[in-house]
Image 1: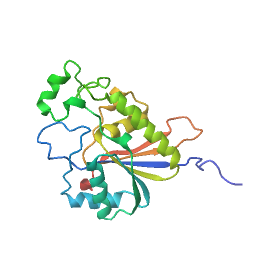
Image 2: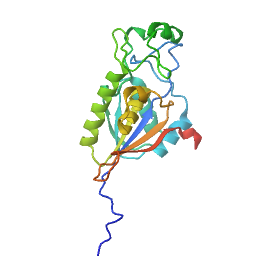
Image 3: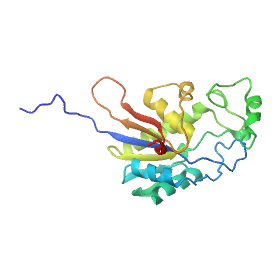
Image 4: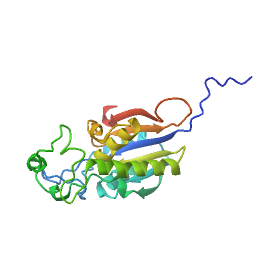
Length: 216
């Protein structure tokens, strides 16, 4: 008789979220959804990322060059991957006219809609920009679509702090406001597995968050 007690009925789709390399050319000014280059001069970290991330995964970046640069460096240091797919829905929050402003000016621009862990409250859209709630809606749409399209695969998504927080919030069924309390360092990895089953509980399993290879 086959023992079915420990047999899993779960098909896991594994998301490996990587935050892009740091931006140093902004000279203390907010860049948000604008498109500055990243500082990629840390080869030992890219080697660590290539060793950590799975080969032959589906590679996704946002439409901003700092995510594409980051993935190119990881591949150059050993990651074997299929062709890269660009998803504009995974770009960073658009802060509108705040982009290009010195960071020290942002609290005055955001007042009184200040937030402890972000530039402004989740429901506030800067002029000509979008709110963090808007970001979570577009990021969630991408997650659902690609999870369905690539069921059972590894998805390597090189993105930004805002979308990675949104992915964690989606996995844990949190409000947009509560997403903002997650730390996402540059070149860190967050692993979220989609594991739907008939058993009670969330369909997402948080394997780890904010893991930086240099700490190995």
